[in-house]
Length: 285
Image (cartoon, rainbow, N blue to C red):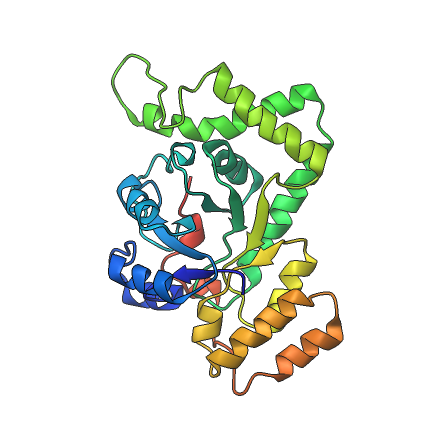
């Protein structure tokens, strides 16, 4: 593993418990910081600057502005450019990823559906982002400008919610104007040139076996996040080792098979997405 996420409950338990999910207690986070030599990430609620500032002050290595916690702001995410600490954010499609990068995210993870042990949402989001990147690569300047305007439109929700006359197009990231358009267009230009997102891109949400990890890496991910898939299996220590091994050797089927054979007992039982009362991947704007 190259990093750990400080969280007192895995997403499967957060989902089961219900209620409002908030950032973890500082004492728990500090305990993890004190006992590990690899980078420590911690989650803040979407749009919750108070939680993010606490995490920054504690010296965690990265903030995950996470849909696994209950969103705090229904209109905007955190202005990540105002922080020294890097952020990772989730995305289900290219427009969402571009908005987060415009806001300052240093890393994107495809959301999947956290706490389910079901890979289908992770695959869906990876497929869609890849598809839309290919579409961007086929666009001329006019279509790129049109796409930038379409991606910016989500920032207008607050102004459109007001029933009063008059116009104010301010956001935590600046005014919705030509400068914002240029910033979003520049991200799209990078996507077109690179043929991928211009930041590190991991997969998350539903990875529950070494084969799942290998599959997402084969789909072009730079790495994976896994939590419930380890701790809700019958054999968490071996599952953790096996998933790390399969991720490192994702393109070597014999190594992935060896990793799969390391596990004693069953993987996380998991859930069909159609049975869920709350879809976490729908959180985020």
